[in-house]
Length: 429
Image (cartoon, rainbow, N blue to C red; front, side, top):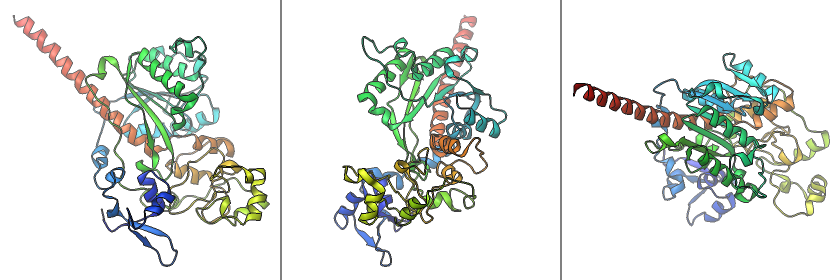
């Protein structure tokens, strides 16, 4: 890696896990800045980050080593709440073979079926599905269950007390299939949901149904070849009869941060520019106002009269509201994609065209391959993509899960060999 590589201020802030304002305040103190004479923008030499622990992955990482991980056998997977397939594609790339994908949304199921005719996709309410036919056949069961509040009045926080929630159905599927490993993923807000009670209940139930939970971790997608500031919490648990013989390690970070330019233009992520597709449009007056927002800017970068017109009553409220009238920047990762790129609270305006991102631009930012087709109305497609796990993040986590299952497989081989050896010794005596 070139120690003289120049990194924009925004990228350095992402790497160090702090704000652009804080990094800017460090200039010429903790970090020596380089000012671009034409644009006035600040950059920092890569080598300046060596003293920061959070930047160590830029100089030493096991990413390339982990890319070589391959399954020792055909590991079978069931995925619940499968959506449009972001997690499924990533796990498939890691080497998993799908037994079942369950999803209640019809359009998402059509998306899965259209792209993988060999996948066993069940479009039904999970509450109506019997998983017992897969008992003993599943290596990994996974799913991003919707986060729901549980009722605590007079409850003991046990498995049966969560009946009626979708996490209960996830746990029921685990009990009925008895997989070696389970993976649950969710929005990072799960950590604070219902003052932390929801996550505490989930941890208790995972233990109750016979699994050892690895400490949950929030993974930032930008560190796993995803050009987007998306964060998801991952929970990995290992069946208790296996857990003391193996260990799980979360994936190493990739030594580069990708930007919106990497997502939409030919380069290291994709071998051609993003294909042209349809997208939502702004009403005329909104378009006129957003045309005044600079690249990387938001409503506070507008003249005061336009701020007042656009924000209305919200103009006088506190908080930054940085997602409003937001235009993305070519040289930064995208903000977290939402399900509606044209709505006032969740705008994701193209960096130099005054329009929302198209659905294929959305898919690129989520690292879906260009050949992955989506079914349903335009709003449904945006929702499917916006709700997905980024493919490259899923792939990285998938390799770590394959490594874990390889360890389990090696343990079971050793156990079997030891039994056979003891049996032969008995026969000989």
